[in-house]
Length: 312
Image (cartoon, rainbow, N blue to C red; front, side, top):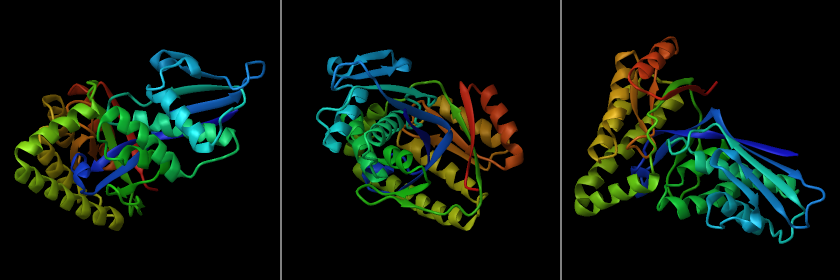
C-alpha cells in the first residue's frame, strides 16, 4: 500500500486580488488533511482501477465513472502524465477531514494526494511542481478561474508567497503564528464568488483595481512582518484586508460576525479566508488567547473551529 496525506490550506492575505496579478500569502493547515491510499488489487482484470471515495458517495471502476468528475479526472491526468496506458490492477481509496466548499483547499488537496499516491505506487514519483500543475488543471475545469494558490500550498506543504504565473516562493516564518479558523458551515462556491467579483470589476474597473492594489500592498507588508517575527503587527493588516474584501462584495453577515467576535475575544486581527460568501474566516491571536477566541467563535455561530500553528 502507498499512502499520501496532504494538508488543507488557509489564505492569510491576498485572496481575490491574486486572481488579478497581485500577490497572496497562504499556509498549510496540517490539522486537516486529504489522504489517498493505493494498493494492488490481485485477481482483478488487468488495467482495472477501483475507486472508493465514501465522503462523496463515489465508488466504482474508473472506466465506468464520469471522466469530467474531479476525482476520475485527476486519476486519468496523472496516468497520462506518467505515460502509463495500462496500469496493473489497483484499488484507490480517498478520505478527507477537510470541510468541503469551505475555503480550506479540499478539492486541491484531494487532487494532490491522489497524484502523489498513484505516482509513488507506480514507481514514478512526481515533483511538487508537477503535482501542483495537475491539480490546477482540475481546479480550472471545476472552478472557472482559480488563482492557483490552493494547489501550490498543499503540494509544497509550506507557507508560500504566491503571484500568479510566477514560481511560488516559500519563505521563513520568524516567529510562530497561532491561528484559529472558524467555519461558518455555509458552502462557498469559488466559481460563484470569483465570477461575481469579475462582473463587478468589469462594471467599475478603476475602483476595483485600486482595492486590488491596496490588498497587494498589504500582502507585501505582511510578508516582511512575518519574516521578521513581528507577529502582533499582522493584526491591523488582517483587519484592513477584511475591510477591502467587504468592499469588493465577498464577505457576509456571518463572516463579519465571526471576525468581530474574534477581535473582541482578544485576537490581534481577523478576516475571511478563501472565496468568501460563506466558508471560513481566520483569526491571529496570542497563544494564551487561543481558547478564548475559539470559544467566542463557537458562541458567535461557527459550525466548527480549528486551531493551527505556522512555524516552529
